[in-house]
Length: 98
Image (tube, rainbow, N blue to C red; front, side):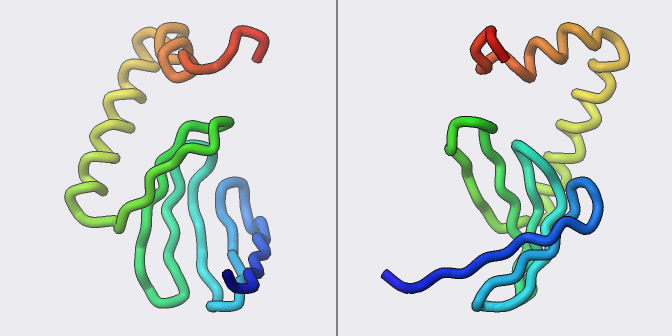
């Protein structure tokens, strides 16, 4: 095990500059999905379930980017049609006291 250091600086809502011993990176996103451009130029996407500590991290490719845009477009369209249904579907995992 080695020593780790990380500091996040908020630039705008959902936009961060990350400082660590390996360099400077930038993150865009929020709870559930974040895109990170590392100090070495690698682009990664992290998808997770907020509040659980579970997440999945993969390199950002063109295929994944297109899939994410399509998912966001479908959810956005569904939200315009039935906002309460979309809210309920996006928060199905949360205990009722949230």
